[in-house]
Image 1 (spheres, one colour):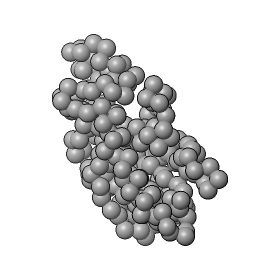
Image 2: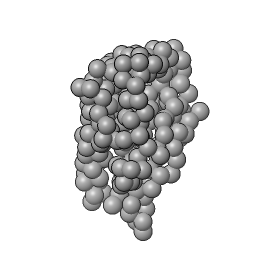
Image 3: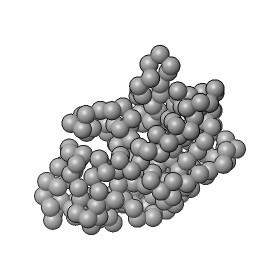
Image 4: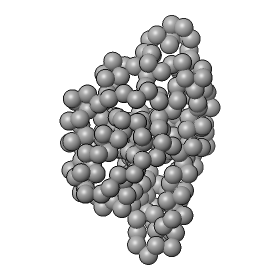
Length: 206
């Protein structure tokens, strides 16, 4: 076991974040504030030793990851499995608009990881597609004599789900892992004498 730490960074603010609109797979851009957030996070993250940076292919994550990659001097890999939850017909709409048409739906979605927005995917679906990214890195580094650390740059919902998946939390407990601020990050880590992933930090940032 040589993959010892996984850091999961959420992208900076987008125009949809600022307007309280659901994004999902929509390819939204960083605002000026979002670019500033990424720039502020980059030197803090550069102080940690990473062996690899992998980002979602969506522009908001890619541009955030690029700021960190420039600060660390590491190349950037892209993996679309790190995309945010596909929110189906909710994408592009505000929570208030959804609540008018489907009263109680947002609360149900937030409290049940198997609840699926119309035409979208559930949090469980997201973890099933994203968790193999870490599992494949684990296998790749299995015989590596050095301790390895990776940075994944992605999205709030995906990060919350990935943390739950790595910690092997029961689905009933997933809602206790809350939201992630823009350009904030979570860390899961493990050691030789305690091989399970453990949460080392959540919602960390400048």
